[in-house]
Length: 126
Image (cartoon, rainbow, N blue to C red; front, side):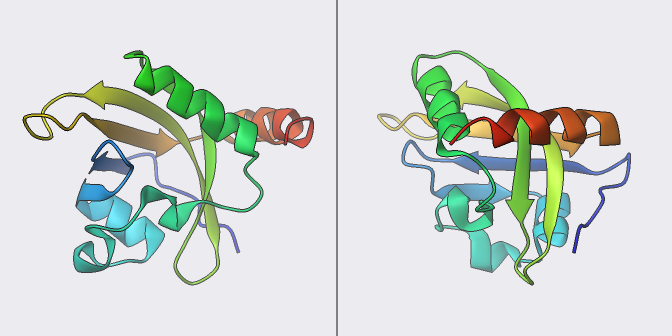
Protein backbone atom coordinates (compact mmCIF):
# COMPACT_ATOMS: atom_id res chain seq x y z
CA UNK A 1 0.00 0.00 0.00
CA UNK A 2 1.34 3.41 -0.95
CA UNK A 3 1.90 6.05 1.70
CA UNK A 4 1.67 9.43 0.01
CA UNK A 5 3.75 12.12 1.64
CA UNK A 6 2.23 15.42 2.63
CA UNK A 7 3.54 18.58 0.98
CA UNK A 8 5.08 19.56 4.32
CA UNK A 9 6.91 16.27 4.92
CA UNK A 10 10.70 16.64 4.76
CA UNK A 11 12.71 13.50 5.45
CA UNK A 12 16.32 13.90 6.56
CA UNK A 13 18.95 11.31 7.37
CA UNK A 14 22.69 11.26 7.83
CA UNK A 15 24.89 8.22 7.30
CA UNK A 16 28.50 7.28 7.72
CA UNK A 17 30.63 6.43 4.68
CA UNK A 18 29.28 2.87 4.62
CA UNK A 19 25.63 3.98 4.62
CA UNK A 20 24.85 3.27 8.29
CA UNK A 21 22.30 5.68 9.73
CA UNK A 22 23.69 8.20 12.23
CA UNK A 23 20.65 10.49 12.31
CA UNK A 24 17.04 10.34 11.15
CA UNK A 25 14.52 13.12 11.67
CA UNK A 26 10.98 12.66 12.94
CA UNK A 27 9.37 12.77 9.47
CA UNK A 28 11.66 10.01 8.17
CA UNK A 29 10.94 7.79 11.16
CA UNK A 30 7.19 8.42 10.94
CA UNK A 31 6.88 7.76 7.20
CA UNK A 32 9.18 4.70 7.21
CA UNK A 33 7.45 3.32 10.32
CA UNK A 34 10.58 2.86 12.44
CA UNK A 35 11.56 4.42 15.74
CA UNK A 36 14.78 6.40 15.84
CA UNK A 37 16.31 3.65 17.99
CA UNK A 38 15.46 1.06 15.32
CA UNK A 39 17.15 3.14 12.61
CA UNK A 40 20.38 4.31 14.25
CA UNK A 41 23.27 2.07 13.24
CA UNK A 42 21.28 0.22 10.57
CA UNK A 43 22.18 0.39 6.88
CA UNK A 44 20.13 3.00 5.03
CA UNK A 45 18.99 0.28 2.66
CA UNK A 46 16.65 -0.86 5.46
CA UNK A 47 14.11 1.20 3.48
CA UNK A 48 15.20 0.10 -0.01
CA UNK A 49 12.30 -1.14 -2.10
CA UNK A 50 12.94 -4.17 -4.35
CA UNK A 51 11.45 -2.30 -7.34
CA UNK A 52 14.39 0.11 -7.32
CA UNK A 53 16.96 -0.82 -9.96
CA UNK A 54 20.50 -1.47 -8.78
CA UNK A 55 21.73 0.92 -11.49
CA UNK A 56 19.99 3.85 -9.78
CA UNK A 57 21.87 3.21 -6.54
CA UNK A 58 25.14 2.64 -8.39
CA UNK A 59 24.69 6.09 -9.93
CA UNK A 60 23.86 7.58 -6.53
CA UNK A 61 26.93 6.08 -4.84
CA UNK A 62 29.28 6.86 -7.75
CA UNK A 63 28.08 10.48 -7.68
CA UNK A 64 28.34 11.16 -3.94
CA UNK A 65 31.62 9.27 -3.55
CA UNK A 66 33.08 11.59 -6.18
CA UNK A 67 32.08 14.56 -4.01
CA UNK A 68 29.07 15.63 -6.07
CA UNK A 69 25.41 16.03 -5.10
CA UNK A 70 22.96 13.38 -6.41
CA UNK A 71 19.29 14.10 -7.11
CA UNK A 72 16.66 11.62 -8.12
CA UNK A 73 13.43 9.79 -7.40
CA UNK A 74 13.41 6.87 -4.99
CA UNK A 75 10.77 4.33 -4.06
CA UNK A 76 11.29 3.24 -0.46
CA UNK A 77 9.72 0.52 1.69
CA UNK A 78 8.02 1.05 5.01
CA UNK A 79 8.44 -1.25 7.99
CA UNK A 80 4.89 -2.59 7.55
CA UNK A 81 5.43 -3.55 3.89
CA UNK A 82 4.08 -0.42 2.26
CA UNK A 83 6.03 2.03 0.13
CA UNK A 84 6.47 5.73 -0.56
CA UNK A 85 8.08 7.81 -3.29
CA UNK A 86 10.41 10.74 -2.66
CA UNK A 87 12.53 13.20 -4.56
CA UNK A 88 15.91 12.81 -2.88
CA UNK A 89 18.94 15.06 -2.76
CA UNK A 90 22.02 13.32 -1.35
CA UNK A 91 24.99 15.41 -0.27
CA UNK A 92 28.54 14.34 0.45
CA UNK A 93 29.09 15.39 4.05
CA UNK A 94 32.44 15.64 5.80
CA UNK A 95 31.05 16.41 9.28
CA UNK A 96 30.65 12.77 10.34
CA UNK A 97 33.98 12.35 12.11
CA UNK A 98 37.63 13.11 11.68
CA UNK A 99 38.39 10.45 9.09
CA UNK A 100 34.96 9.18 8.13
CA UNK A 101 33.11 10.93 5.34
CA UNK A 102 29.39 10.44 5.37
CA UNK A 103 26.29 11.57 3.54
CA UNK A 104 23.21 13.68 4.18
CA UNK A 105 19.95 12.90 2.39
CA UNK A 106 16.99 15.29 2.22
CA UNK A 107 13.76 14.07 0.71
CA UNK A 108 10.44 15.63 -0.20
CA UNK A 109 7.17 14.54 -1.76
CA UNK A 110 7.39 13.55 -5.42
CA UNK A 111 4.43 14.56 -7.60
CA UNK A 112 2.34 11.95 -9.40
CA UNK A 113 3.81 13.07 -12.74
CA UNK A 114 7.37 12.77 -11.38
CA UNK A 115 6.64 9.29 -10.02
CA UNK A 116 5.18 8.17 -13.36
CA UNK A 117 8.31 9.35 -15.21
CA UNK A 118 10.59 7.64 -12.67
CA UNK A 119 8.62 4.38 -12.87
CA UNK A 120 8.83 4.39 -16.68
CA UNK A 121 12.59 5.05 -16.57
CA UNK A 122 13.24 2.44 -13.87
CA UNK A 123 11.43 -0.24 -15.88
CA UNK A 124 14.14 0.18 -18.51
CA UNK A 125 16.92 -0.26 -15.92
CA UNK A 126 18.09 -3.04 -13.64
